[in-house]
Image (cartoon, one colour):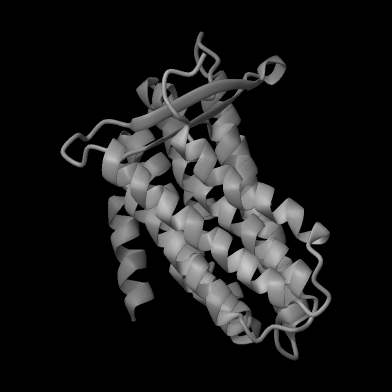
Length: 289
């Protein structure tokens, strides 16, 4: 029995469920679906603002609005979500930028139902990435987010849109395998098998294993963050994507890479992070240049 309203689950599922209703809207010219998708985006953004304003304590450094339900118990997969001071601003950013991008896409008249379906699906997946506290759930949300981005670029992009979309998908999908491998390695290390990210961060990994895990996750998140030399997908994707999709690429998706580095690399693998810090500093300077 729930003791309180599941705010984060509602914030994630509202755009997802709303996207499933788009095919049933009685709209031939795409005008109603625009207002519908924009209304859903605004409603979800106000829902997260209300939840954080009334139920989140900014003075506390702990995870809040914690929800955990058994999802696929046979695999040990739980629907575990929560927020802290790192994830709250990113959730708000994702909601704001995605809503504004749907407004900026007002002139889209090619397959508007599919376009706004993908935008709402992307909305939901982005939020799930920032609030997931189960590493398998994080990986699933990370992968689901790739599909709408690929289609949004390949269908509504520029002249070389398919090349750019395919390059984006190959780079990010291949790199994300490291998240799965690292997550499984951490989950099965030791006597306690768990996918809970808080518990994974409390395990004592050998330094050699920790360095390997850190390197793999650095590749996965570095590609998404477009860190040199794993950045070559970004100019093509930005150049060929439509303006609304470019807003999401720059405003949200790149931040997902930085979030992953903070949440997994820094917080869960602190000893390896100390040793990788000079490399990160060097890469940061190179990317600035």
